[in-house]
Image 1 (cartoon, rainbow, N blue to C red):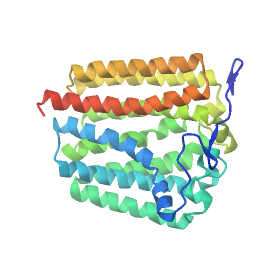
Image 2 (image 1 turned 90 degrees about the vertical axis):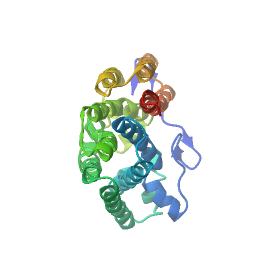
Image 3 (image 1 turned 60 degrees about the horizontal axis):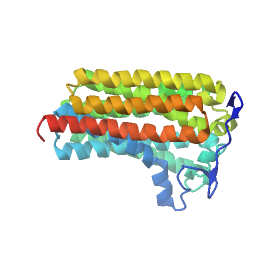
Image 4 (image 1 turned 60 degrees about the vertical axis):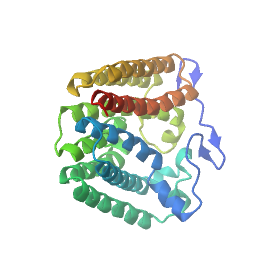
Length: 315
């Protein structure tokens, strides 16, 4: 795929045949089960959970509740990711970036992975129901069901809007964090949900630009693999601009102050600027830099949200 005379080159491979930037191939059974959970994705999901709990509490919630919510969320996300690897094991063997996954290498048997994923889900639901409340447990389960059945089984292989719709599952942790504290869902977590929903396409498409050959090889209609790159970049920019707008909407809705407001504006400007820069020079390396910044963006955005709440409430 190219824009003008600028071709997108294939991904460089790290030692062991794993795409540059990917995790190393696990060599032990324990390492294989850990890899099934996709720990890096879990980290990102949990980054959004605790700040939302702080916002809901108007300060630091009970530490026990925080730990329970994190544990339940981590177990559920790990189970959902294991289900994802179970379903996708046929296409994972066709993609260089995923050929080191434990179900592709044979380190873990598919049946064992399925039981492992199911066990994590049952434990996660029990932890959240007993330690937080039934609503947070149900929201967590709904995210798993959506991710597995709507995104992984259906949309990922059939629609170029797969990650747009499927991204809703990754936005649910903010609802879980809020509901674990309040046992309800208000407008502030809904705005946070929208922010994460809008963040997902530019975040993931930046990665997909770098690994476009993988998606083509596996016949997965990820947008960069099936649409002109200039169209992908226009959509990335549109999602980013609207997302930044919603980060501003959160100020009055979440009763946030200048610490969050100024920081969110600066972080958003950098995100928009990075997307524009990629549009002007659409090289895979630049796409990966934008992908990396998108992760830092979420981490910093939710970090300053936490700081704003704690400072304004004297914690």
